[in-house]
Structure formats: structure tokens, C-alpha cells
Image (cartoon, rainbow, N blue to C red):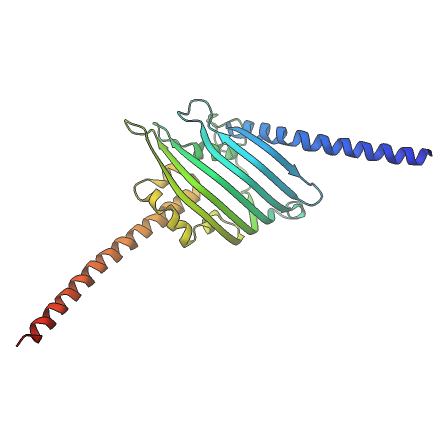
Length: 259
């Protein structure tokens, strides 16, 4: 066997070992990074990422609440697939994702006695730049993160709300069954299309959504649900008035028909 052939085989073997090490260590690295940043226990069953094509595939991701929460569950994700335009982040200040598919089986929101929610704690971990959900450090200043998702597919089966802010634990499950496709999403508020808001309506009918969901999305959803409730009440009142008007009209017609 020639030296050049041996060198080629050796090089192929090195690349193969590097690829295997990348696939084996990447889930561990991601779990550690998310755990350090948020303070939540994150587990990933399978994760693959191709640095040349920008394809990322996650299977079986779960996030559990930090110690001190009365219930453990937070997020159960069946899968996530993304095709990322890597050069967009390098050449501009905005990350472009060509395709993003999120398939969530369950999200459990927990409201504690002090008014904090697990969703808000999770989001705060990123704004603080690490240190866990209970670090209590102020948000680090910096440029806002910009992202554009050209094609987005979101599925969410169940939402569970566990409320410990009152004298008794109150828990309720909502079968949302959201399955919606979007295009050119650059703001989370764009997710609140009419059919999605309609799916969330039972959840927001008797709750302060802003206490459970953080940031602009929580406020926007709360406003949208409030508007939907007002519209529903107006339509209901209008229906009652119309019913009364028609009844009166029929009564008059009946009286005029009598000899």
C-alpha cells in the first residue's frame, strides 16, 4: 500500500472519529449550556447539527423546573428542526432561519406564591446572560437579538397551568391542539393570528396571562384575549337585543293578523 493511500485512509479515519465525537458530545454540551444559562434541567434525547448546511435536528427535549418549584414539569418537546442561514448572522445583525418546525407535546406553566412563573424565570436566564434562574442579577445591556423565520410551523398539544398563588393549588389542562404555519416571522406577536388566539381563549378567560407568560408576547396575548372577550360579550348582547326585537316583531304581526 502506497504512503499516499495510507495518508488518505488515516485522514478519513480522523474525520470519521471527529464526526462521531461531535455527534456524541454536542447534546451534552447543549444540555450543559442551557442548564448553566437558565437554571432549568434540560435533557436532549438526540441532537444533530451540520455546520456546513445549517441543519439542526432535535428529538426528545425536556426542560424541568429548578429546585424549589412545587412541580417538576415545564416543557416537553417531541422535536425541533431548523435550517439556519449561517452567513446571515456573520454578515448582518440578524439571524435568518429558512425553515423552523417546532412540535411540542406539553407546556406546563407554574405560578408560585410570590407571583413568579417558571416561564418568566426561564426567559430571565437568557436576559441575564447566564447564572441560572434564581441569580437575581440585573439584565445585561446589549444589542437586542434579531431573527427572521421565513417559514415556521408550530404545533402545541396541551397547556397545563398550575397556580400556587392562592390558598390552594389550582391546576387545569387545556387541549389547545395548535397546528399553524407562518411566513416571515420577526416578532413573536405575529404568532397571534385569530385561530391561535381562539385556541388560547379558554386559558385566558379567567386568568391574568401577563403573570404567566413573560415579555411582549405575554402582554400581546393578554390584550388579544381581552379584546376577544369584549367582542364576544358585545356579540352576545347584540344577539339578545336582536332576539328581543324579532320576538316583538312577530308578536305585532300575529296581532295584526287577528280579525
